[in-house]
Image (tube, rainbow, N blue to C red; front, side, top):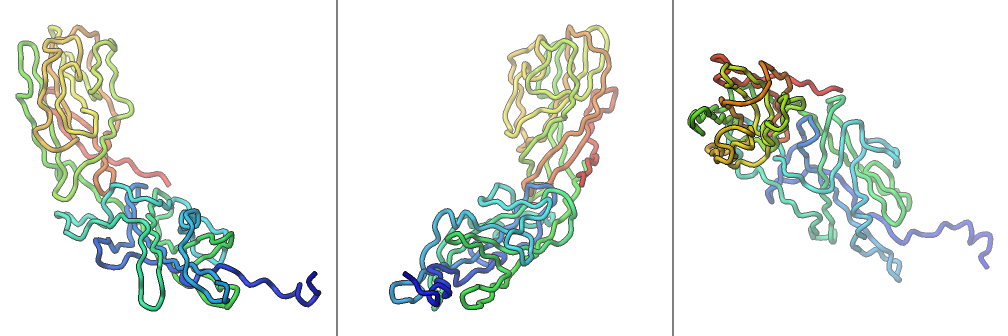
Length: 354
């Protein structure tokens, strides 16, 4: 049984953190040293959490040990403060895995050789005199909200004890003091004039049928990776005529049963289509249409065909959204010229609400 004096002596901790820091990646190893991230919730910014866990051995000495899996998973970033219960500020997310979007800013040219990031997570980095350090990678994103510089600290739970990189270690007054400041960056604009436009005006030509395929390719260093078709595309009055891969912007009654119809080709891959993908119950239903003459998912079709369909002239007004490889959204509207015989692309805005 403990005496009263013994009961007043606090138990010495069996585990502690010897090193606990948060930092941006160091140059080298393919890392992207970047503190900015594009608004929109897709692009990531890499942040490293450096940890060294120790355990007291039988002789009372501290020796380095490896983090448990659940401890490593608990490592995250939160808003900078002295509060161990702090969470992320509004609009920010912290991921444990790297996504496919390019990190860093697009500078209007082809990407340099150092623009890729080492995805290994975590890695052990032996540093002379310090023992093994664990480098835990985390990836920050900013969706929307107050787009100002934001200061973060790291947080981790070790053997049930919460540590932050803005605290004094209780057993010996060791100070943990490190942070990173990240900056939301407004996405760049890609007006229609900056896209390389080409139309294949002979994609498919037959009796009472003419199909043109349009392609738009972004500037060097960019590529579209997600094709978000208009939410409220025109629906033909006869649904049995509607193709499965055609988001229609307009229909026009030329006369004598001939219709001109323009619309977006959905999908995130560049492959060929058939006439049935666009419109059914027309001539050439199973005819293949070459639709991969440019390596871009931003494609549209203008169809002129005899069609037994009750539609009269109709015009949609939805926004067509493309996401590029930096995670930035670009918004367009598909219009027409030459009595709806030629498609025209118009850049538009779709503000991100705060």
